[in-house]
Image (cartoon, rainbow, N blue to C red; front, side):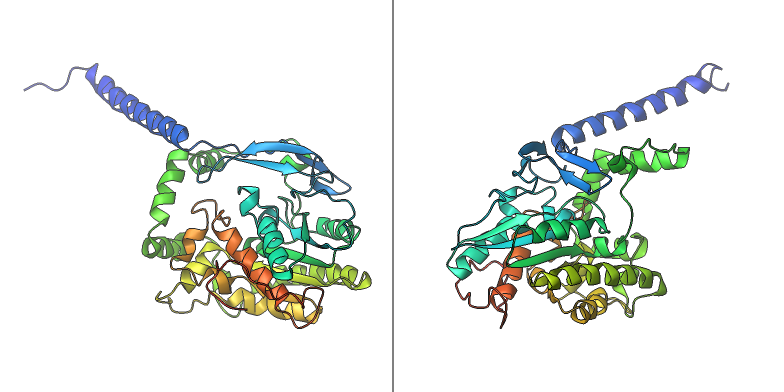
Length: 372
């Protein structure tokens, strides 16, 4: 019995490869049609003097593959707030919101952002209008925030709330990306190109999303292959000590500015999805893992500088499946999770024994499952 004809030796593998390529292209095209994406923010600007900011009176349409289409609008000061940034009537009080992507409400409809929820909830609790000017920007937590604090204090707020996540602290002090600085991108090698192609694949995103919906599979894979997980171990490793030192310096500088202006500053902490997933009711805690390790390290920093500290983990973990409050692949709090964080921040501000909102004792919609 003879072997394959000579031309089949290369033709059959070529057909197999072509079929695989067609299937991959078809899968990717279908995924992109079902889960479209628009992450470019046409209102985003970068100025070396002030860092990342947004064009005043600008709007842009955006979408993450996992979320809805939404319009990001910026007011007359370039803040993502519905209300103008001018002087308030005597009957109103103002909160200035600072931070990075979570403060801004990245990838979330404005009505579902922390800023919008905080404004609505504080107005209900206080019985008088409370205006929230959202100075949050999609940028690293670094010295840029000091100039944003000066800008916030010029708005004459009654309080400043700084919203930071685990990710922000992990990357505290890092510089803006080449894209932000409008610098030419650096060349990448073949391995980096392959990894980037896989990361940007919409089909891979969809697969990750649905796989992450199973907490047992998600947590096992994350703890084993998720990369940086040292923030889940107490005490924090030596690798985290420089980041805590940077956080200490930046918080100290922000607190000093707030204290000179006689405006209270509160640090609101937002955990990552793995942290609240591990805190979920009935979840078995792996040996050596402590999802509160980072909070235990940063709460004393806030206390040392005389500012308030609010850990929104308390509210987020009270939900039946708390990891569903996040975009599964992107990792930001979704439009379901941000209002819960906002309601808890509002409760804590209004429940304080002193401060500009201590007299507020109204009622807000029950969204968080915990009491002040």
